[in-house]
Length: 284
Image (cartoon, rainbow, N blue to C red; front, side, top):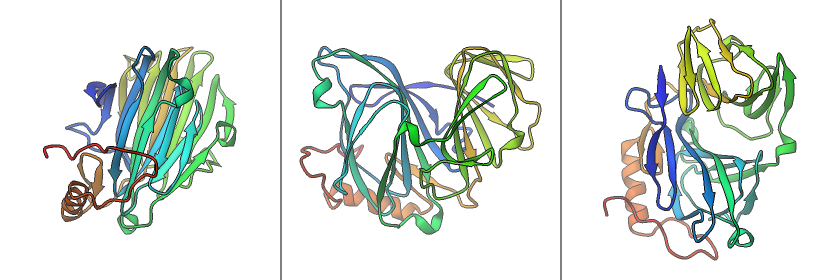
């Protein structure tokens, strides 16, 4: 399956949405992927995503260019730079904001990266919220067959990222210095292949940047990655239960989503110190 990015407006920012897709809601535990940019910032245009809630998931923010300031209702204030990972677990409920740092306003710069949601196992959907930051130097890296690998999250190829994931999964960043062959057979569960830059050839078809490939179970034919390409590989073991999604809420229970909607509309979620304003519940 090939899924093309679909343009979505999230306020002052346009993104390319890859998941969820009408014919494919999840890949392993990954339930939402937005490709941000590359976009030119400056002249009054900055990233300003105000306070908004999450339940039942972990957010994974991963940048290639630009910087963002994360604040949440746990009291976390964390700047994220290219190559680092912000991993926020919403559990029973958390609120956060994402903005351009104050010291970058007034200058011109580019923002490019991914916002990813990973659904929690059913037994952790009501867990206490938490936050973890991994600097770029904390992540395992290696070279093999013309490919520079970074293990962003989870476990793969006998290596483990320090990011504290909650189910068997993987996310890999691949940069190809030369034409290279790659196969998903060393991984496990469901596998998604996101083409950030360049192209791949799979089963005789050339697929360009801006597309997501979903490998069929047991696929072993592999892909050819063109030199200079940049690829994200992600996936893992799927959950046995269906996941429902509304706005920023993910749960195996429709009733829990309805409760979260009511709690946000009635301002019952925790607050972020120093933040004002809040993104309203859609349709209210």
